[in-house]
Image (tube, rainbow, N blue to C red; front, side, top):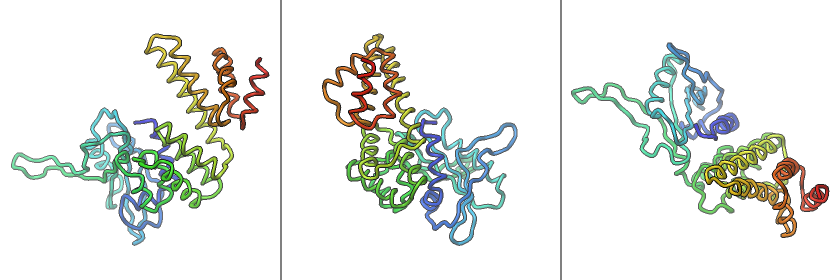
Amino acid sequence: MAATDHPLKRVVALAGLDLAAWVLGQAVQAVESGQGALLAEPEILDTDLVLRVTLATGEEVILHVEFQGPGSKRPMPLRVLEYQARLVDTYRGKLLQSAVFYLGGAGTSDSGEHAVYTGNGTIAVGWNYVVIHLWQLLAEDLLALDRPALLVLIGQTQIGQPVATLTAAVARLAQHAKGVERERLLTELLILCTDKEIAAMAEQIIERDYGLPETPMMRKWREQGLAQGLAQGREEGREEGREEGREEGQLAVLVRLLQRRCGPLPAALLVQVQHLDPAQRLDLAEAVFDFTSVADLEAWLGQVG
């Protein structure tokens, strides 16, 4: 599963009511997490999420949700068939609905309708599930659902007008939740913006319009992003067989992070950063999380000479 696997599971915890109503197409009054590991011989089968959903009518539906990015070794239709067989046995007599959310270009040929036929053309086994191709979904259509918590997924959709769309999405999330919940939702939105430019734009909008303090989750996100960027820089250097390729990749990530924290950097400061040795760059990468302005960078560079 793609790197967005765990964040997407957290999204369901934050937006379970809205997601269930979206998938089921009905009003929902309650959602609680069900059993995520389906027990059966000869092995335990792990699903992404199983939710107990209480509809507005009072009926209970077992909602099974899978998130799938590119690179699955086993076809999703076969996986869902096995999941559904286990779910029917685990939750006997309950209404059942499965849904698969595809990311990053995955699932192009999956309609959610599948069958195995007998020799005379009748259906031996038939199964179906809701399919949502997030990567094909227009950001404007996600906004039109009027379910604010789901807007954390906006970075997985097609965004034609990034500034207007992201500003609207952030505003609705900010109005929808307060305090820690709002910070969590906005942080998940940033994590799920897989395009770096979109992520940077969303972060600027959040900081400009709401001035949220850097929370532990936000700091972790920044550190993970920096670590991935530095690792990518090293990998690019190895692939090209040039030490300078690796260093350029690391430097580019460091400069981008400095600009996000401090704003535009004067040319003289950029030159000083470029002349730092590898160990000093790593020290600066750790120190940058405490910077709030260009003056902080100037002071740090002054200390290292």
